[in-house]
Image 1 (tube, each protein chain N blue to C red):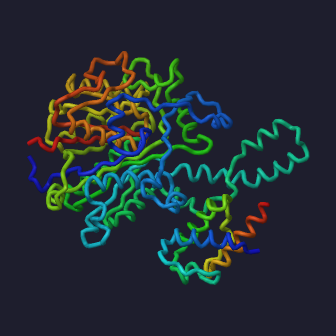
Image 2 (image 1 turned 60 degrees about the horizontal axis):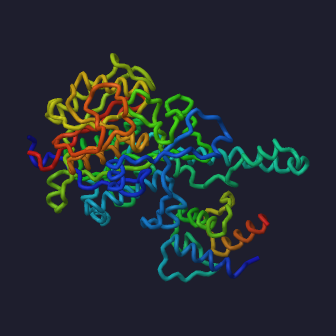
Image 3 (image 1 turned 180 degrees about the vertical axis):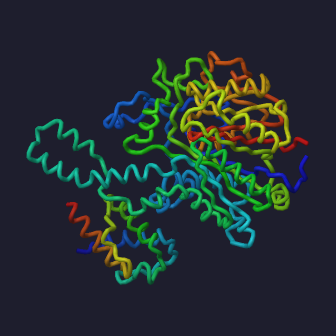
Amino acid sequence: MEDAGNLERIQRVIAETLALTDPDLSRETRVKEDLGADSMQVITIIISLDEEFDTEFDTVDLPKENVTIGWIEDFVARTLASKG
Amino acid sequence: MTAQSDRVVVTGTGALSSFGSGSEALWRACLAGEDPSAPVPASWSTYYRATSRTWAPLPPMNFSAMGFSRADVLTMSMPALLCAAASDEAMREAGATDLFRAAGPGALRAGVFVGTGFSGAKAPFDNYRAHLFGGMKSRFEQLLQDFPDDADLTEHVAALKAHARVNPLVICQTMPNAPSATVGIRFGLKGPNDTVCYACASGTVAIGRAYQAIKRGELNFAIAGGVEHLRDNAGGVFMGFDRLQTLAKPGAEQGAENRPFDRARTGFLFSEGGAGMLVLESASFARARGAAALAEVRGFALTSDAVSMVSISEDNNSICAMWDRLLEDARLAPTDIGYLNAHGTATEINDQVESALIERYFGVGPKINSTKSILGHTLGASGALEAIVTIKSLREQRVHVSRNLDHPIRELDFCKVSAAHPFDFALSESFGFGGHNAGLIFARVDHD
């Protein structure tokens, strides 16, 4: 399901939102536990992805813990596929 | 004369208004007598038929150019953005942008006071549409597949414009205290962080509360003002005021509808909103850090009519009592007031009562104008924006024209044109739905 272009765009949004100057990000990176984001910042990332991908991602299924960049990439791919 | 240490001074102002970003842009537009009015968005007529069809929109705001990140713009409510941007300008002028960010003990003696009437009304209005109509729209769209030629159904589906999901930050965007909290977080101010709600008097009361806290010695420093943002996707707030029959009726000519204190007035020009923020500090604190004073806050008073939610009358109000207390606080007489920035909404009753009481209390003394004749009514932001205009007037010794005042309802010294005017003390007043009467007196800083 993954798209290399999507992953790069997601990583860029995360780095910008969290003001990471030298990010070392992978699919396994956990946004809260590894990057220190709080709940508000995780939601901010999702809302920033709205603009990046020109759609609206529903946060109702967003896990409270262990949100990895890989989970976000799959979540983006699933949402984009469902909207055709 | 108070001791130097007791004085409260203004050291910075910031504004976002229908004339764009900057308190100077606002002031220049007032002097030029500009008119920001325009027809309301055509899409609003999908949802209701309004009597008034004019408002004063905000121009497109480039928050990125003002230093806000994409995440800021996407997550903060418009009132919080407006308030933060106006505060940025005020703090820059005061030379205080980084003063409290190091979070030293001084930050506990620095507060934030923001007035607003509605704050983030857009967020619940628009998100409730998503909540209600998101599912309904899918069902209508399915129905439309069975009846593709049904023009009424097609029109109704098109009108059900709604976001696909409820914004996960709708609570943070709705909270009335979001603008004041945003300012406190932005600059590291750890003292009281107050949001005051006095309808159209909110901005004036917020500045007054900051002045009182500094005067009492509880704080050294405060950012204070007002903010409002009244655009929502369906024009819901506009509709509410239209139904109250308070808005300016359509006139023969665009720009002539907004006529405070004129015999032909029909109601106020609804503004999309704005923000006015001021930096207040004790004179000794400002002097110690080398900040220049723009004006002195000399007095504040607040009374309530306790009569009606929306109306005032000449014989049963607490406006004169507010002036009594205001002048007592400032240790001045009515004849000392050289300029009065009136509430001046252009509603029939407000202007009738306000002008009659001014004549009775002040005589034909002070120069009088209505900044709302230029800006329209920004509700909770209006008192703060008018305070900034009053301070600019004091500093430049000029008063701006009161627009469309062709046939004044009373023989007071109204500003028919923008002109030089020597004066030392100015009064800026606001009245709010609920019966609130608030006033501030500002003094020239070189007055002794």
